[in-house]
Length: 245
Ligand SMILES: NC(=O)c1ccc[n+]([C@@H]2O[C@H](COP(=O)([O-])OP(=O)(O)OC[C@H]3O[C@@H](n4cnc5c(N)ncnc54)[C@H](O)[C@@H]3O)[C@@H](O)[C@H]2O)c1
Image: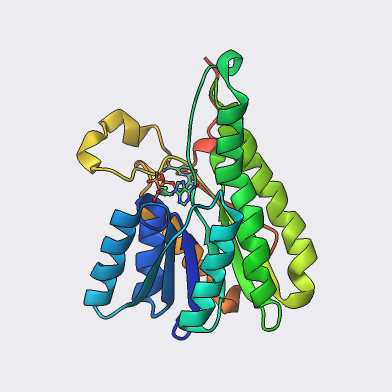
């Protein structure tokens, strides 16, 4: 499905991004893993290459504009094209609102939100001539909250707005922009989860990275080019479940 197409996945060395990278590689894509975690990024690059997949790791801190420009240039040098960008890199830091420092606020916003703007701007410059697809990983915390999550929630709410703004600006160039909002996606050992963890979801289970990766494949499929400016929530029903104590 993605033969001769190049897919950049930020934060692709671990968790959800790793599964997104694996799925695009399994479907024939040239996958570029952009992450600051060099050890796991290089390991995934080697594992995919050893199983005959096309994959490149580029050490990238998505907070740094120069790293992002280098990421895009390196991708073009190696694969000659950028067709899909998945803005997945993110951090979650939860802190008492009263003690939340400017440094921590800035770190979360720069990592989770400003990176989406910078990576998309640089990739879109190269997609302009032949179209492309941008997928932003937001969160159900864009719509609903626990206490002391201001920076993270604001970053994810910002991603939703940035998604439809970029869809408006980039449609003349046939670049589609959508977001995916995961609920609880367990990236560790499934044995860590309790029965209650699973059963509180209408789906009867906690989410898996594959649930998000499949949505990315769907959105990146050029047959689905009637979808742009949208968000897909994947949360086992949790944002539709009414809860009054
Ligand atoms: N896991 C969940 O339940 C869940 C729910 C909603 C949204 N999300 C979102 O999904 C995305 C992936 O989450 P995850 O659970 O897989 O997290 P994770 O911590 O397992 O993986 C995040 C990856 O991003 C990388 N990263 C972090 N900061 C970076 C930076 N400055 N530059 C480059 N890479 C950086 C990390 O090295 C890591 O490889 C995030 O945007 C997160 O907010 C996750």
